[in-house]
Amino acid sequence: MNNDFFNPLRPNSFSEFVGQKQVIDNLKVYIKAAKIKDTSLDHTLLVGHAGTGKTSLAYIIAKELNQKIIVVNANSIEKPKDIIIALSKLNEGNILFIDEIHALNKSVEEVLYSAMEDFYINLNVKNDTKKDILRYELPPFTLIGATTKVEDLSKPLLDRFSITFNLVRYTYEDISKILYNLSKRLNYSYTNDALDKISSVSRLIPRIAINYLKRINDYALIDNIKVIDKTFVINVLDKLGINKYGLNSLDIRYLKMLHYDYKDKPVGINTITSFLNESVKVVEDMIEKYLIELAFIRKTSKGRIITPKGITYLNSIYK
Image (tube, rainbow, N blue to C red):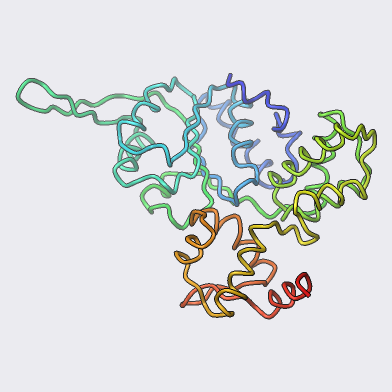
């Protein structure tokens, strides 16, 4: 098994996984059925925001099936031979997990079509003066894809996933429970209102909440704090530059750019990424999604624009 199964920050079983009840209930059925039929689990697509547990679910699925999991990121797969190398490492029933699968290029996708549907790939073999195509049989395996942008998947690839789960939004109670479970595993003691405070600034994304918990633990360790209360959490969040909305310095720079530098006029994504010196992915996934959720900005056909609510917020912190 992959050592990541023993990562103390990951849930190691369905019983430890908080939230996504409908997804978990259905997965249990599909996994049990696959075991009874003695077949590999059908190819599965996990759709959800970054940090919502897609990778953790993939590891848990592999553990429940008692199968090896090979993990790759689509951004690192540049040529067909890259995916062929990963496929060649699979044994029967193994799992190939492709994160950010929407980022695969067309030539790599085309290799996956036959691999997923009929468990074979065609290899181009040079033979003296000519090229031959060799059919290479693959053992039955499960491809688990994870994506934050299901709309970017091509239809032929999407159609080859017979199981698709859309991870739903977490609740504040879910996040607090995740933090409580993790704090116990890491031997830190938190008051309930302290955990609720972290939850309130987490953007309802487990990964963000867990990262804040880790940093607060660091401060508690250095300050020799035995029981971490809400006041201590607020003080640490302030040191981290996290305000009551869960906004950080990058979010504030974004809002200030729209309001002060571009005078509330629409701004295109390329201008924004250049100004912030961040990638489109970071801007769209880590900044804009939450600012839109807060109704601080909105997208128009001409670009991004700050809303009256966003302006009011900036005025409240820059009086």
